[in-house]
Figure 1 (cartoon, rainbow over the protein chains, first blue to last red):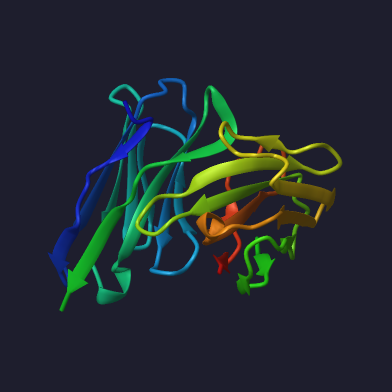
Figure 2 (tube, rainbow over the protein chains, first blue to last red; figure 1 turned 135 degrees about the vertical axis):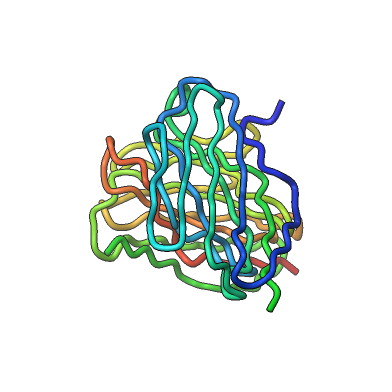
Length: 112
Length: 116
């Protein structure tokens, strides 16, 4: 069983729509959850971090965390072509404190 | 804030030579730095964790004698790929975190290594 699993994608949405990205994790005692965006040929860029259950909003991005279900998601509202990238879910804490464990990534394409 | 730089951004070397990659935190002191490798169409794989002033901790399957890591100061860590082979060609990315209880990692721009 993979430690961090993301919906495989690729995900394609029209411009202006909501893109929904999902992630599950296996280590029940994980404490910190992150979403990174990675453009092709570039390194990851941190876009959201979330630590407690519920929603966290930052501009067009909303992260949702449900520790009981071991599930974290990222919603991108009013998607733009510039949002087209690979989105990486990362988890730390618990048995791997301080180290990030990444999911395999979901490729998002926003088409005009 | 939280800017991490890497140098070089791209390097081509011949098989059997060694290559050094530098990772610097520009506006914060990084107690811990991490080195990752990413092959095409794959996710990041952690290679090692580097703490200032102590030996790096390598992940299972990573050869510590081949990938030498030095974290000599709170703003600089280096990765040396020794006796590089074509299979070492990859995208190497470092990240840094400001403190032991701070787990947001900030990534450098990466170094693309090609071994011919």
